[in-house]
Image (tube, rainbow, N blue to C red):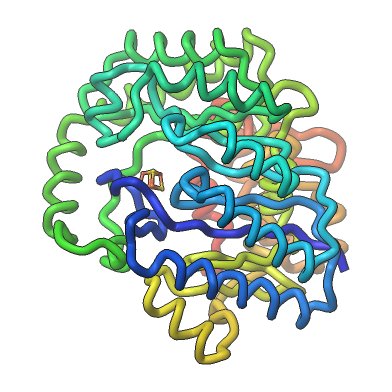
Length: 385
Ligand code: SF4
């Protein structure tokens, strides 16, 4: 059996008010307890799955780069015991202000090939508006340090920020391109109010504070048309600089696409370990709770992952494939899920024919560059009635 591995490290120096990931304070008294439980979960899953081969791995968070070298080495030892671990790609997420040589060496010893830096913006005003703890001046040295140990580099950027101007976003894209990353991700700032579980691990502040911040920030965001223009600008400038727009929010130099994330978008198999992590194994989706305490109780009680109800593999596969420039291979899809599933996709997409939103190549269908920003409107059509 071959699969991909996702490991969730929830710890962050502080909580960015727009964040909906499962995070917890880096100084949490539960940190050692959590890392112990995570290793228990990895060892248990590796044994239950028959020590599978790991094709790609991704350490996300939270801020994995906050782990101490000893913590990284302990995690690495457990993973190597539990799995056949010689992946072609290993990514870890990092805050640009948290990198040092000892940590980078520890990640390299674990097998890291790639770093994903949460740059978000090169504007001091924008970083402050987003509540980030790093400065624009931290980004270039972080890239240089990562490159000095042989890591490929992804930069994450956010657009549609409170008070953002088009000139500011253009400057961000220019600054990012000048640093020649191998890969770039650009996401519009989402301020939908999510359930309280997203903040469960932080004492004080709490949901009402976040809700207030989000309503003020949301009122100061550029309008929908302006955000769509920012996305188009990203496509233009990154395309002109030689990056291929291979997924809705992702651009890469040729051959530098994130292989791990491609496994998600191609609806392949992966095991997710840690709080809030999702898995997709043998056609079944499952997850762990986002709350640290609930996660610890589950692992210590010997309980497995929580199975997701209502997931429809045929719908998931179609939606995920349409995120990608390569699109959905309709014949292969029909062969895998049957004629009824294929007919549902044809029915859902037929009103879009001739609108410039679909691109057909051979037996495949993909969303055009123009349609990708409104992809959610297309995905709704693919949902079961
Ligand atoms: S550093 Fe990243 S994961 Fe941590 S709170 Fe901020 S956005 Fe969320």
